Length: 497
Image (cartoon, rainbow, N blue to C red; front, top):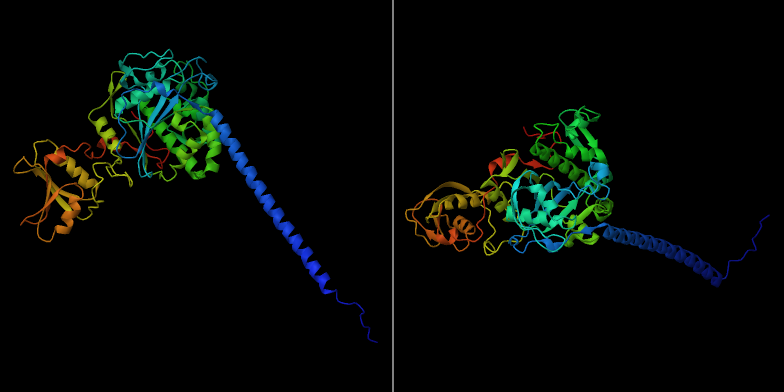
């Protein structure tokens, strides 16, 4: 027997109503999902905003009114100079980490002048030994008066001349600007607490010790070795141990500040590796900034979280290998350190012109006024002989260094037959016109002159000698040979003496 269902299909309007209900359910789910996403976004934004406000509250700025009225002019290139000062002040609870008098406003225990090249792919940090004898220029006191110049004074004393934590950075900045002839764009001071927090947030920093280190190595006044602080070899340190590492002086190598500088450079290099390995993004930088800013004092140009994070983000493309560390050219003067000239001036002139440690142009797309009209130059495969057509000593060598840094091969230098040339000329033989034009691009205003002889030569005139900002050569060999890259092994080149 066949059973026939008496169930009838739902009327069309009922089926449409069901579809509408299903559509409303789907629409409700979509709106709910959008609402959840929007809520998460709002909360994340609010959280970031709250943290930015928190960071703003952390940051202290120093009194820019203490900066000198006679500062160096800003370089025509667009690189930046950042003064990084490690203070040994014991105020604000720092005595718990460093010992000493809790009211001591301190001195500059560590100082780097960091040059960030205009191409934002290279950086060079110059260490200034704390024992360096310098002239400390007038410094503003809390009552508004200014001190007198203090000649032949240890560099680290500049930080204490101003009598206040907010006045001291300006005193040190004035001293560095006078010493180097470079205008400092930003100054950052970090104390013991800020340093220790930063190393903890990154999860520790790899360091290397050439031998076991004991408490007496950190404090030479101890009569017994005390507890062992470090074992020989590579290890990871943070907090108090990181601070002890960068402060050790007497127990390693010859016990000099120069040796300690080598280890401090290695430490900063390792710290940069840790930060870079995490990725330079606002999300990654905010926890680091929260840790560091609690103990930072900065100039007003970096006085907000937004400015500080933006500045850090601008450094994200600098390669570790292209981040170099050197020490200002020095020699011992008794128990102190003296700056060696003209090596130091050559180093700072190189930075001012945005030339790397090997003399290459790292000015990026922003050219100086002197080269603004020049054709971009690449001299690969072109040989040039350079003649000095003036009475200015060393002019041919200066031009040769410029050509070499741009990739040309300098086949020789000599004095021209006459030394009364006004302008610079590029002489070229048959078939060399195209290459001669490339050479002329390195000397704005140079004239091309066809000659019967083979090859290309440059005859320098007084216009080249009078150029207001002649391109310097590479930094002195001794400075370059002692340089450390941020990607070097942490156990290499750690001691002096």
